[in-house]
Amino acid sequence: MTRRLALAALGLAWCGASLAAGDPSAVTLRVMTFNVWYGGEQVSLAKVAEAIRAADPDIVGLQEADRNLERVAELAGMPYVDPRRRLLSRWPIFDSGSGERTESGASPYSTTALDMGSLHAWVMVRPGKVVAVSNVHLSNGAALGDLRRGETAPLTSLGRLAGDGTPVFLTGDFNTPSHLDRAGAGLAVTRMLADAGLRDSYREAHPDPVAEFRALFPRLPNPCFPLKTGDKAYYHALCALAGGFTAVLWRDFFTAMATRFGAPREALAAYPRRIIENVIASSDGAPISSPAVCPGPGMSAPTYTSDATRSGCRYAVSVIVTPPSE
View 1 (cartoon, rainbow, N blue to C red):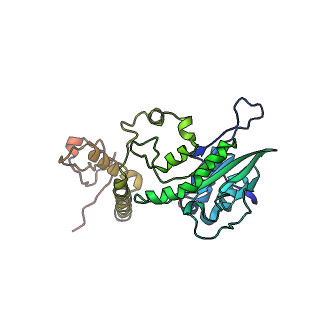
View 2: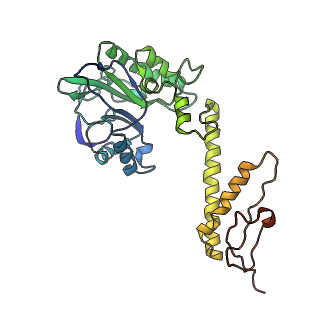
View 3: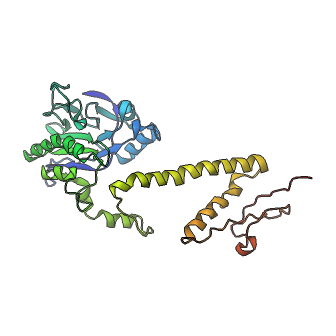
């Protein structure tokens, strides 16, 4: 096992048998799972490490760490790394196998480089006390349910390990809805894990996640709504179009207004803000009026206004537009 200044992570984990809470020798662990998104560089490795430090985990399962596993670990300040299972830990990690794959033939994507009998690592949380930890990233895709179930099948052996009294943790990005959250998800990989004897640790800590979400975000009228699997791509495309495409347009707008007219961004900020308010307030088919653009205090130069009388320039944007000279 590789020793480094290393990382941790947070999220959903599936667990098996646990150390008895009433046992004076019981150990309390914080286990985290974290998909850091394409090597952790989509935002920044520093932010990834900051999130891990804030969660203060003892053991982390990372997904998509790619070549940056040990770099993230070093930045997050955790001393032990398992590169085969992409685990980080405060405590020593020991491979449950020989440290390399000895079986021949193809292996499921979820267990690449691992023998079927050594899917987990041992983490020594105290002298003489170990827990079994495995980490997985299942294939992504609406039509890949059968593939994900095939990738999950080897992991059900962790349930037998838990049945023998060993504390077991399975972290990961399962790329699938839980059978506990969505009716009709009878073939979900989460059901396979539950049938094997593992328990959804998040659901045990939060029996009613929707109610708790509403408590965290009381002003959202509809804080939690399901998306049909076939609608996900369209949903994300709309978000990208509304956010990314319009962001490019507004960036060019601000640049042109600054270079052509000398209008600072802060003076123009009310303009896109008011447009969004108009869009949200308009019903289907209702016209979307343009914001008023009025002179600011003390400004008397010729200025273009749109419906300024009705709006009273409440959302005035202090932009002076001087007519071209003859």
